[in-house]
Length: 63
Image (tube, rainbow, N blue to C red; front, side):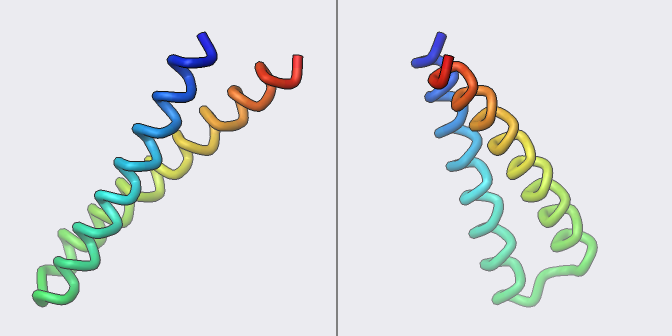
């Protein structure tokens, strides 16, 4: 269980990083504001998921 949760946390963090870089590249190229806003929402959602999974993992490791 802990290994699977660790992998999910890592996946969520890498997905967050990917969306962040996609947003940075889009801004550097002068992309639309609508796309930038959508990527920002995805990044925030992925950060939330990563933090929740990380919190659950820490609770499992503590107990």
